[in-house]
Image (cartoon, rainbow, N blue to C red):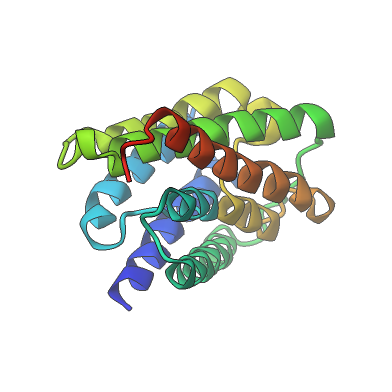
Length: 208
């Protein structure tokens, strides 16, 4: 239960920060910085409890890598989605009647960039937070948060920069993403998690 609560809290603050930075935010707010930093601090806060996935794609990657059981992965994903939905509702309550327009999405480029940066994120997580050679390091949270920040800066204008199925669900609940486009994020993000795990195991066959 402690692990599930940690996953809920970390995902909640990630999606809550995204919503507060984007929905009705004043001019000058640099959302990728806040998003990257909140992920970093939440990873440091919860890493010793749950591994600080806060992302179903990361959970899939860690599971395929062999560091999470299938039953635990299901619980993690449920907790992450719940955290995202509660965060979206909280943003809606705080922001009130602020008008929100769903992002216009060009499907193929969005699929590609979501796959690429989700792959980068899961690959970084596996190498910094689960690899034996990097055990007990102090930089994993910074590396993970920085990956999301870089992705948001680089391709946020293309896909919205979710790189996370739970974030995609939360953003859809806030009206930032059209519900008809949710599949784009789910397909790209989960596929990237699978591929990242396979690539990690190929490069690190001895790390089991």
